[in-house]
Length: 145
Image (cartoon, rainbow, N blue to C red):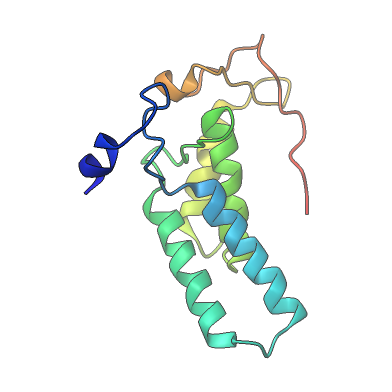
């Protein structure tokens, strides 16, 4: 099916422009939005929302890399993707104690942490995994919410 769509791609400059992919970032954001909606409107379509959150969380766990990271498509790559993976699972009600995916993600992040306490990742990491390059942007503090 995708091949047929690619034939009609009007601009070869933008490879894959006609195909959309699934992203940990979007799935995580959807879980977070549904979890917030559920808190604000606990009686509205409760079962449907819960099923959606559970399916999305299962998807996030399924696409986790074996090293504990997630591939981030919209930012510098694995650290960013892992942040979204963990945030989505937490919003789905999972925690370090009850979710092996979160534990694996923590192990991954700790393995890439710099002596300064931050994380550095090259824009080339999408091709080469996380590089811990000190000259790159350090994410000194993760947003908390």
